Image 1 (cartoon, rainbow, N blue to C red):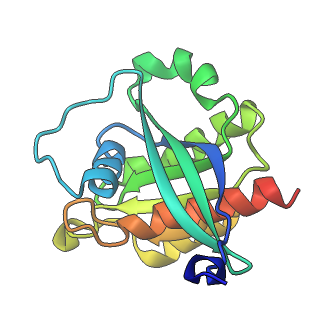
Image 2: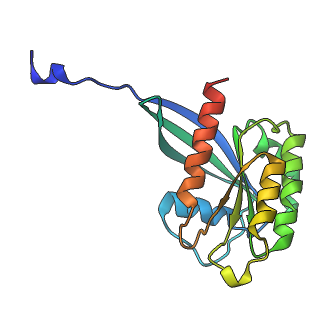
Image 3: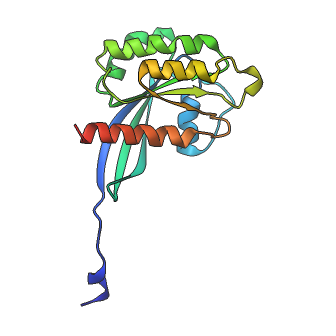
Length: 188
């Protein structure tokens, strides 16, 4: 027996899932995605026009097997003039990341509006995360943890806090949504 015959290959399985990232303008949706995919942070605010789509691959372990999950992440514009375009952007989503800015109360209040839009488009049963971004701005914080936890329970969404500037919590949210979506779609 040759040395090569001793090697046991574990097949990798691969899946592609659509995840929408939604929330008010300037909460850091694009910054979170940029930090995750490029490890960079852009200090200049450039509003998303319509939608930006990024493909990211995440490796998960499922019953001892490596699974490659490809996320097609749709970074949806938060500006009101793009609301009429939401239906095609939301259509077919496998997961949702709802983002608000911990320093701006209005963005927290509007999470419910974003969630209601997702429900209106038939997405009430899919995995979702609630993300409070900009935790590096400690002195400006308006939304305290009990408020966020209450909303996450109401939405039946895991809650995470992140900083796109420092990178804190960023990888975790994308790994968590990949895991949730993979198990939701493959275990149905």
